[in-house]
Amino acid sequence: MAAPDDLPPVLRLYRRLARLSPGGRLFSWLICRRAPYFATIRPRITTLDREHCIAEMPDRRAVHNHIGTVHAIALCNIAELTAGVLTEACLPRSMRWIPKGMEVEYLARAKGTMRAEAQPSIPPAEADSGYELPIRVTVRDREDSEVFRARVRMWVTPRIARSPRGRTTAD
Image (cartoon, rainbow, N blue to C red):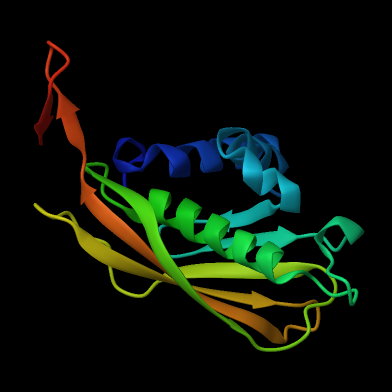
């Protein structure tokens, strides 16, 4: 296991808050404060480590479509959320990321509480230039049936260092 100082800040925060708030409620609330749009699906991040992120989205009318199932965009939101939190947790601290694209498949009607799990398709790495990091996300219903699948493509680049005079330089 990595020493606490080697952990990405988001993973350190998750581990610290997991002791104070079992079930990930406080951590999830903080993530939604940082990225407010995700609050629309009321996610709860229940598991986070360098290999996967699991989040639940409760079943409620606000995420339903006109036929009473979970809306496609709500499924996309939980996929992007889990992929982003995982990417933040698994990348070396010298790297940064931004979503580049997402391919999705709707496999079955999504009813009830959804559980999304994100995993990197390739091991994240430190690099001198940008590269694409694909993150696989599966979303399952309460019966453990896969209802949605996504591949979120993250663009990963070295962090930009700021000089004392405010100019940016490559690390």
